Image (cartoon, rainbow, N blue to C red):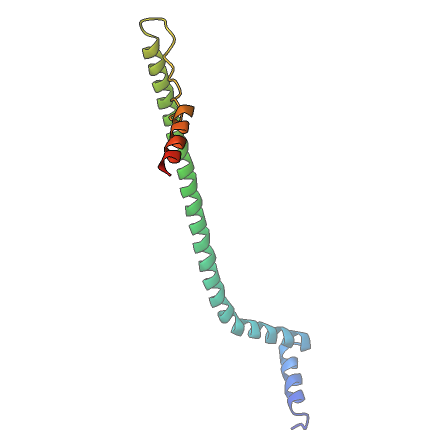
Length: 127
């Protein structure tokens, strides 16, 4: 029996493990393996969240790309339709006589100077 207490236990365990460094390595390994399930569970949760976010972002980007492609196709289709309509309208106006197309005149002003004077005269006659 020894009066060294915990130091005696430590030295005895170190001798059995093959030295102090070997004993400390065993203690570290055991500590990590006991703590690992806690971190492993958190790691799994974080991994799932990151994976779900990555899939969500990928789906969003694919939808945006599809939308851009669809808008591009619709724009090309509208451009073709516009060209077809302008070609048709230019052919229909140029058929027959070779005259200039009629121009629409600007509407005449409804307030002529004589009407403005008449209004003033009516105002003067009312008093």
